[in-house]
Image (cartoon, rainbow, N blue to C red; front, side, top):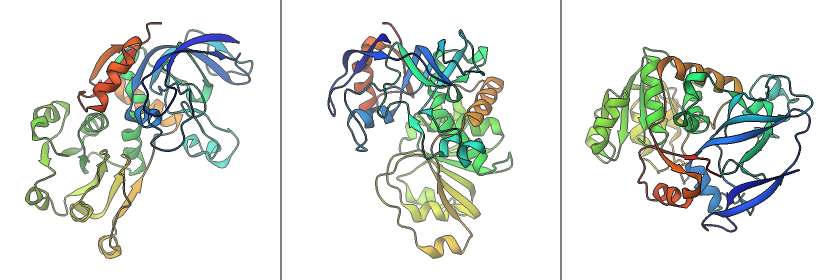
Length: 337
Protein backbone atom coordinates (compact mmCIF):
# COMPACT_ATOMS: atom_id res chain seq x y z
CA UNK A 1 0.00 0.00 0.00
CA UNK A 2 1.17 3.51 -0.76
CA UNK A 3 -0.24 6.83 0.43
CA UNK A 4 -1.42 9.03 -2.44
CA UNK A 5 -2.17 12.76 -2.34
CA UNK A 6 -5.27 13.94 -4.16
CA UNK A 7 -8.16 16.41 -4.22
CA UNK A 8 -11.60 15.15 -3.22
CA UNK A 9 -15.04 16.48 -2.41
CA UNK A 10 -16.83 15.15 0.64
CA UNK A 11 -20.44 15.85 -0.32
CA UNK A 12 -22.60 16.87 -3.29
CA UNK A 13 -21.57 20.23 -4.75
CA UNK A 14 -18.78 20.83 -2.27
CA UNK A 15 -15.40 22.29 -3.13
CA UNK A 16 -12.51 19.87 -3.41
CA UNK A 17 -10.05 19.56 -0.54
CA UNK A 18 -6.66 17.86 -0.13
CA UNK A 19 -7.18 14.17 0.62
CA UNK A 20 -4.87 11.20 1.05
CA UNK A 21 -5.77 7.58 0.37
CA UNK A 22 -3.99 4.27 0.15
CA UNK A 23 -3.39 2.75 -3.27
CA UNK A 24 -2.88 -1.02 -3.26
CA UNK A 25 -0.10 -2.92 -5.00
CA UNK A 26 -1.33 -3.77 -8.52
CA UNK A 27 -2.69 -7.28 -9.03
CA UNK A 28 -2.99 -9.38 -12.16
CA UNK A 29 -3.09 -7.08 -15.20
CA UNK A 30 -3.38 -3.85 -13.21
CA UNK A 31 -0.94 -0.96 -13.55
CA UNK A 32 -0.25 2.14 -11.49
CA UNK A 33 0.00 5.39 -13.44
CA UNK A 34 1.72 8.50 -12.08
CA UNK A 35 -0.51 11.37 -13.17
CA UNK A 36 1.10 14.18 -15.14
CA UNK A 37 -1.95 15.93 -16.64
CA UNK A 38 -5.67 15.50 -16.09
CA UNK A 39 -8.50 17.19 -17.96
CA UNK A 40 -11.71 18.35 -16.34
CA UNK A 41 -14.85 17.13 -18.09
CA UNK A 42 -18.40 18.23 -17.32
CA UNK A 43 -18.96 14.63 -16.23
CA UNK A 44 -16.60 15.37 -13.32
CA UNK A 45 -18.89 18.23 -12.30
CA UNK A 46 -21.94 15.96 -12.62
CA UNK A 47 -20.26 13.42 -10.34
CA UNK A 48 -19.25 16.12 -7.83
CA UNK A 49 -22.90 17.22 -7.69
CA UNK A 50 -24.20 13.61 -7.70
CA UNK A 51 -26.34 14.65 -10.67
CA UNK A 52 -26.64 11.03 -11.83
CA UNK A 53 -27.16 9.48 -8.40
CA UNK A 54 -24.08 7.24 -8.60
CA UNK A 55 -21.50 9.27 -6.68
CA UNK A 56 -19.92 8.15 -3.44
CA UNK A 57 -17.83 10.32 -1.16
CA UNK A 58 -15.07 11.19 -0.65
CA UNK A 59 -14.97 11.51 -4.42
CA UNK A 60 -11.71 12.00 -6.32
CA UNK A 61 -12.76 13.09 -9.83
CA UNK A 62 -10.65 13.08 -12.99
CA UNK A 63 -10.90 10.77 -15.99
CA UNK A 64 -8.83 12.41 -18.74
CA UNK A 65 -5.42 11.34 -17.54
CA UNK A 66 -1.99 11.39 -19.13
CA UNK A 67 0.73 9.84 -17.04
CA UNK A 68 3.63 7.44 -16.73
CA UNK A 69 3.36 3.76 -15.86
CA UNK A 70 5.30 3.31 -12.62
CA UNK A 71 4.24 -0.12 -11.37
CA UNK A 72 3.02 -3.34 -13.02
CA UNK A 73 0.90 -6.25 -11.87
CA UNK A 74 2.44 -9.71 -12.33
CA UNK A 75 0.34 -10.54 -15.43
CA UNK A 76 0.86 -7.31 -17.38
CA UNK A 77 2.13 -8.04 -20.91
CA UNK A 78 1.37 -4.97 -23.05
CA UNK A 79 2.99 -2.18 -21.01
CA UNK A 80 6.28 -1.51 -19.29
CA UNK A 81 7.44 0.89 -16.59
CA UNK A 82 8.11 4.29 -18.16
CA UNK A 83 5.43 4.09 -20.86
CA UNK A 84 3.35 7.25 -21.31
CA UNK A 85 -0.33 6.31 -21.34
CA UNK A 86 -3.77 7.84 -21.25
CA UNK A 87 -6.72 6.71 -19.15
CA UNK A 88 -10.30 7.81 -19.75
CA UNK A 89 -13.74 7.13 -18.28
CA UNK A 90 -13.20 3.38 -17.95
CA UNK A 91 -10.51 1.66 -15.90
CA UNK A 92 -11.57 -1.98 -16.07
CA UNK A 93 -13.73 -4.52 -17.90
CA UNK A 94 -14.21 -8.25 -17.39
CA UNK A 95 -12.17 -9.46 -20.37
CA UNK A 96 -14.25 -12.62 -20.80
CA UNK A 97 -17.69 -11.62 -22.07
CA UNK A 98 -18.83 -11.50 -25.71
CA UNK A 99 -18.30 -7.74 -25.94
CA UNK A 100 -14.76 -7.92 -24.55
CA UNK A 101 -14.00 -10.78 -26.96
CA UNK A 102 -15.18 -8.59 -29.85
CA UNK A 103 -12.92 -5.75 -28.66
CA UNK A 104 -15.94 -3.66 -27.69
CA UNK A 105 -14.95 -3.48 -24.03
CA UNK A 106 -16.82 -0.22 -23.50
CA UNK A 107 -20.05 -2.25 -23.84
CA UNK A 108 -19.03 -4.83 -21.22
CA UNK A 109 -21.68 -5.15 -18.51
CA UNK A 110 -18.92 -5.19 -15.89
CA UNK A 111 -17.02 -2.06 -16.88
CA UNK A 112 -15.65 -0.03 -13.99
CA UNK A 113 -15.50 3.74 -14.27
CA UNK A 114 -12.37 5.58 -13.25
CA UNK A 115 -14.36 7.81 -10.87
CA UNK A 116 -17.30 5.62 -9.77
CA UNK A 117 -16.53 3.83 -6.50
CA UNK A 118 -12.82 4.33 -7.12
CA UNK A 119 -10.44 7.27 -7.01
CA UNK A 120 -9.74 9.15 -10.23
CA UNK A 121 -7.08 11.34 -11.76
CA UNK A 122 -7.11 14.39 -9.51
CA UNK A 123 -4.41 12.48 -7.66
CA UNK A 124 -0.73 11.65 -7.74
CA UNK A 125 -1.38 8.09 -8.90
CA UNK A 126 -4.12 6.04 -10.50
CA UNK A 127 -4.81 2.29 -10.58
CA UNK A 128 -6.35 0.69 -13.68
CA UNK A 129 -6.31 -2.39 -15.91
CA UNK A 130 -3.64 -2.35 -18.62
CA UNK A 131 -6.33 -2.71 -21.32
CA UNK A 132 -7.58 0.79 -20.52
CA UNK A 133 -4.15 2.42 -20.21
CA UNK A 134 -3.46 3.25 -23.86
CA UNK A 135 0.05 4.12 -25.00
CA UNK A 136 0.36 7.61 -26.45
CA UNK A 137 2.47 8.45 -29.52
CA UNK A 138 5.42 10.72 -28.68
CA UNK A 139 4.02 13.65 -30.66
CA UNK A 140 0.87 13.62 -28.52
CA UNK A 141 2.43 13.47 -25.06
CA UNK A 142 1.20 16.98 -24.28
CA UNK A 143 -1.54 18.43 -22.04
CA UNK A 144 -3.67 19.18 -25.13
CA UNK A 145 -4.10 15.43 -25.64
CA UNK A 146 -5.63 14.73 -22.22
CA UNK A 147 -9.21 15.72 -23.25
CA UNK A 148 -9.09 13.22 -26.12
CA UNK A 149 -9.47 10.39 -23.60
CA UNK A 150 -13.06 11.39 -22.87
CA UNK A 151 -14.23 14.28 -25.03
CA UNK A 152 -12.23 13.15 -28.04
CA UNK A 153 -13.20 9.49 -28.12
CA UNK A 154 -16.83 10.43 -27.41
CA UNK A 155 -17.06 12.28 -30.75
CA UNK A 156 -14.61 10.13 -32.74
CA UNK A 157 -16.37 6.80 -32.22
CA UNK A 158 -19.64 7.92 -33.93
CA UNK A 159 -17.66 8.56 -37.14
CA UNK A 160 -16.79 4.86 -37.21
CA UNK A 161 -20.16 3.63 -35.93
CA UNK A 162 -21.99 5.48 -38.70
CA UNK A 163 -19.43 4.55 -41.38
CA UNK A 164 -18.88 8.17 -42.31
CA UNK A 165 -16.89 8.81 -45.48
CA UNK A 166 -15.36 11.95 -46.96
CA UNK A 167 -18.32 12.59 -49.28
CA UNK A 168 -20.80 12.76 -46.40
CA UNK A 169 -22.20 16.01 -45.09
CA UNK A 170 -22.27 16.23 -41.30
CA UNK A 171 -23.68 18.69 -38.78
CA UNK A 172 -22.36 19.16 -35.25
CA UNK A 173 -24.87 20.48 -32.72
CA UNK A 174 -23.13 22.40 -29.95
CA UNK A 175 -19.79 24.15 -30.15
CA UNK A 176 -17.98 23.60 -26.90
CA UNK A 177 -15.62 21.06 -25.38
CA UNK A 178 -17.00 18.17 -27.44
CA UNK A 179 -18.01 20.14 -30.50
CA UNK A 180 -14.65 21.76 -31.21
CA UNK A 181 -13.05 18.30 -31.27
CA UNK A 182 -15.80 16.82 -33.45
CA UNK A 183 -15.31 19.59 -36.02
CA UNK A 184 -11.58 18.86 -36.24
CA UNK A 185 -12.03 15.11 -36.66
CA UNK A 186 -14.74 15.50 -39.32
CA UNK A 187 -12.86 18.19 -41.20
CA UNK A 188 -9.75 16.05 -41.46
CA UNK A 189 -11.95 13.07 -42.35
CA UNK A 190 -12.80 15.07 -45.45
CA UNK A 191 -16.43 15.88 -44.62
CA UNK A 192 -18.35 19.09 -45.23
CA UNK A 193 -19.06 20.27 -41.67
CA UNK A 194 -21.86 22.55 -40.49
CA UNK A 195 -22.06 23.73 -36.88
CA UNK A 196 -25.35 24.43 -35.13
CA UNK A 197 -24.68 26.78 -32.24
CA UNK A 198 -26.48 29.35 -30.11
CA UNK A 199 -23.48 31.69 -30.35
CA UNK A 200 -22.85 33.29 -33.72
CA UNK A 201 -19.84 34.96 -32.06
CA UNK A 202 -18.03 31.62 -32.32
CA UNK A 203 -18.17 31.52 -36.12
CA UNK A 204 -14.53 32.58 -36.45
CA UNK A 205 -13.41 29.81 -34.09
CA UNK A 206 -15.62 27.29 -35.88
CA UNK A 207 -13.96 28.17 -39.18
CA UNK A 208 -10.52 27.90 -37.58
CA UNK A 209 -11.25 24.34 -36.47
CA UNK A 210 -12.51 23.38 -39.93
CA UNK A 211 -16.24 24.11 -40.07
CA UNK A 212 -17.65 25.17 -43.43
CA UNK A 213 -20.69 26.96 -41.98
CA UNK A 214 -22.19 28.00 -38.65
CA UNK A 215 -25.99 28.13 -38.20
CA UNK A 216 -27.63 29.87 -35.24
CA UNK A 217 -29.91 27.35 -33.53
CA UNK A 218 -32.39 29.94 -32.25
CA UNK A 219 -33.10 30.99 -35.83
CA UNK A 220 -35.81 28.62 -37.04
CA UNK A 221 -35.76 30.09 -40.54
CA UNK A 222 -32.06 29.26 -40.85
CA UNK A 223 -32.68 25.71 -39.68
CA UNK A 224 -35.47 25.23 -42.22
CA UNK A 225 -33.06 26.17 -45.01
CA UNK A 226 -31.18 22.93 -44.34
CA UNK A 227 -33.95 20.44 -45.17
CA UNK A 228 -32.78 16.95 -46.30
CA UNK A 229 -29.12 18.03 -46.17
CA UNK A 230 -27.15 15.93 -43.66
CA UNK A 231 -26.09 12.31 -43.56
CA UNK A 232 -25.25 12.62 -39.87
CA UNK A 233 -26.20 15.11 -37.18
CA UNK A 234 -23.93 14.69 -34.15
CA UNK A 235 -25.50 16.15 -31.01
CA UNK A 236 -22.80 17.22 -28.55
CA UNK A 237 -24.90 19.69 -26.54
CA UNK A 238 -26.63 18.94 -23.26
CA UNK A 239 -29.76 20.92 -24.15
CA UNK A 240 -33.18 19.86 -25.36
CA UNK A 241 -33.65 20.53 -29.07
CA UNK A 242 -36.53 21.08 -31.46
CA UNK A 243 -36.18 17.52 -32.65
CA UNK A 244 -38.58 17.69 -35.63
CA UNK A 245 -36.46 20.45 -37.18
CA UNK A 246 -33.33 18.34 -36.92
CA UNK A 247 -35.03 15.24 -38.28
CA UNK A 248 -36.21 17.41 -41.14
CA UNK A 249 -32.57 18.34 -41.81
CA UNK A 250 -31.54 14.70 -42.32
CA UNK A 251 -31.25 13.14 -45.71
CA UNK A 252 -33.06 9.81 -46.20
CA UNK A 253 -31.26 7.08 -44.22
CA UNK A 254 -29.58 9.79 -42.14
CA UNK A 255 -28.92 9.52 -38.41
CA UNK A 256 -29.13 11.84 -35.43
CA UNK A 257 -26.39 10.53 -33.14
CA UNK A 258 -26.49 11.75 -29.54
CA UNK A 259 -23.42 11.95 -27.31
CA UNK A 260 -24.57 14.84 -25.11
CA UNK A 261 -26.79 13.88 -22.17
CA UNK A 262 -29.91 15.84 -23.15
CA UNK A 263 -32.06 16.13 -20.02
CA UNK A 264 -35.50 15.05 -21.21
CA UNK A 265 -36.99 12.17 -23.23
CA UNK A 266 -36.92 12.76 -26.98
CA UNK A 267 -40.42 13.06 -28.50
CA UNK A 268 -40.27 11.70 -32.05
CA UNK A 269 -43.31 10.85 -34.21
CA UNK A 270 -42.79 7.41 -35.72
CA UNK A 271 -43.60 8.57 -39.26
CA UNK A 272 -40.76 11.11 -39.17
CA UNK A 273 -38.43 8.12 -38.93
CA UNK A 274 -40.35 5.69 -41.13
CA UNK A 275 -40.83 7.95 -44.13
CA UNK A 276 -37.12 8.60 -44.66
CA UNK A 277 -35.63 5.49 -43.04
CA UNK A 278 -34.05 7.82 -40.50
CA UNK A 279 -32.51 6.83 -37.18
CA UNK A 280 -31.77 8.22 -33.76
CA UNK A 281 -28.78 6.64 -32.05
CA UNK A 282 -26.34 7.27 -29.24
CA UNK A 283 -23.02 6.15 -27.83
CA UNK A 284 -20.63 6.77 -25.00
CA UNK A 285 -16.87 6.72 -25.49
CA UNK A 286 -15.23 3.85 -27.37
CA UNK A 287 -13.07 0.77 -27.04
CA UNK A 288 -9.31 0.81 -26.39
CA UNK A 289 -8.86 -0.27 -30.02
CA UNK A 290 -10.81 2.78 -31.18
CA UNK A 291 -8.86 5.04 -28.82
CA UNK A 292 -5.66 3.87 -30.54
CA UNK A 293 -7.19 4.66 -33.94
CA UNK A 294 -8.17 8.11 -32.69
CA UNK A 295 -4.67 8.80 -31.36
CA UNK A 296 -3.03 7.73 -34.62
CA UNK A 297 -5.47 9.90 -36.59
CA UNK A 298 -4.85 12.83 -34.23
CA UNK A 299 -1.07 12.47 -34.55
CA UNK A 300 -1.30 12.40 -38.35
CA UNK A 301 -3.63 15.39 -38.65
CA UNK A 302 -2.51 17.34 -35.56
CA UNK A 303 -5.91 17.19 -33.87
CA UNK A 304 -5.77 18.53 -30.31
CA UNK A 305 -7.99 20.21 -27.76
CA UNK A 306 -7.82 23.95 -27.27
CA UNK A 307 -7.20 24.17 -23.56
CA UNK A 308 -6.75 26.43 -20.57
CA UNK A 309 -4.20 25.10 -18.08
CA UNK A 310 -4.39 25.25 -14.31
CA UNK A 311 -2.34 23.68 -11.56
CA UNK A 312 -4.00 20.79 -9.74
CA UNK A 313 -3.87 22.97 -6.62
CA UNK A 314 -6.11 25.46 -8.52
CA UNK A 315 -8.75 22.83 -9.22
CA UNK A 316 -11.62 24.70 -7.52
CA UNK A 317 -10.91 27.84 -9.53
CA UNK A 318 -10.90 25.74 -12.71
CA UNK A 319 -14.20 24.03 -11.82
CA UNK A 320 -15.82 27.40 -11.12
CA UNK A 321 -14.82 28.58 -14.59
CA UNK A 322 -16.21 25.40 -16.12
CA UNK A 323 -19.53 25.76 -14.27
CA UNK A 324 -19.90 29.27 -15.67
CA UNK A 325 -19.24 28.05 -19.20
CA UNK A 326 -16.31 30.45 -19.26
CA UNK A 327 -13.79 28.10 -20.88
CA UNK A 328 -12.67 27.78 -24.49
CA UNK A 329 -12.77 24.86 -24.80
CA UNK A 330 -11.36 22.38 -22.27
CA UNK A 331 -9.52 22.62 -18.95
CA UNK A 332 -6.39 20.61 -18.14
CA UNK A 333 -4.73 20.39 -14.75
CA UNK A 334 -0.96 20.01 -14.22
CA UNK A 335 -0.22 17.69 -11.32
CA UNK A 336 1.74 19.84 -8.87
CA UNK A 337 1.65 17.69 -5.75
